[in-house]
Length: 64
Image (cartoon, rainbow, N blue to C red; front, side, top):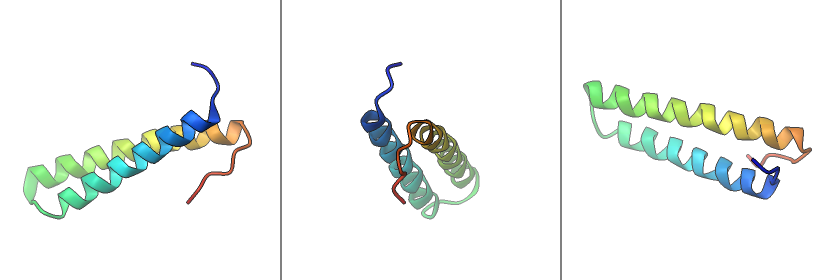
């Protein structure tokens, strides 16, 4: 994979958006569906952490 911090920022934004979406959806359901959505959100948070790490390796400030 080529080192492209701009692409990494786009990926980070997508991961964060997906996490927020899954958390919002989880608030609308109960039980196993809620747990599954929260698990997906957690996975997206892990993906976001990966891109944050990559951005840090390139000296890029990570937006909040």
